[in-house]
Image 1 (cartoon, rainbow over the protein chains, first blue to last red):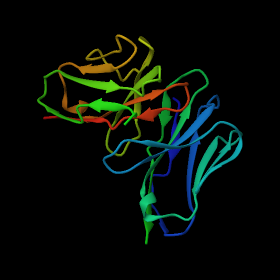
Image 2 (image 1 turned 45 degrees about the horizontal axis):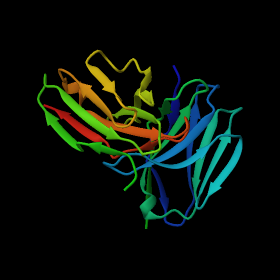
Image 3 (image 1 turned 30 degrees about the horizontal axis):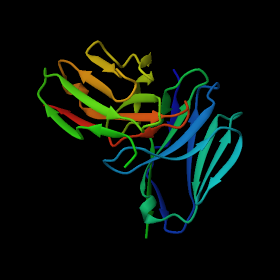
Length: 111
Length: 112
């Protein structure tokens, strides 16, 4: 069964620190990877996508992909209290269209 | 607002009743997806449409569930004979390409 694993947390960081969120996936054929942010009671919001090995930066966010290790990470620099949310990692397989989600990591940024 | 919209946002129903949810995707998106999310879990895939064709269904989509996208625009998800285990957030997403999917606000279903 294809799985995406995340540490549920909570991950607590002080304001201004770097938050590091990690994710592993079981389907070696997965081609596309995504990070969604979900505030309590709201729907997931796409914040990053990554398709090839290496780093991808967008503002305060950096996504990292290592296909050999089947590992995806999200770094959030200069963390703000408004970043406090659950972060969902998702993978899309080679043949499929469905996204396979992890259970999410809860991030808490204290001011 | 040009994002994905869903209606209703909340639905409370009694066990055994039928419910129907509607999703309107982003206008230029030809792909539409339904997911279900329960507390503490990530979204779980239910079904996928490309234009009006339903191309993929999860084993989670039991015989009580049916989805349609008759004209390749909006979609409906119907649950017949609801059970308490159907209580969840039902999420619709759309995309232009297979990759990046954008979610609507969801419909929260409570079965009493």
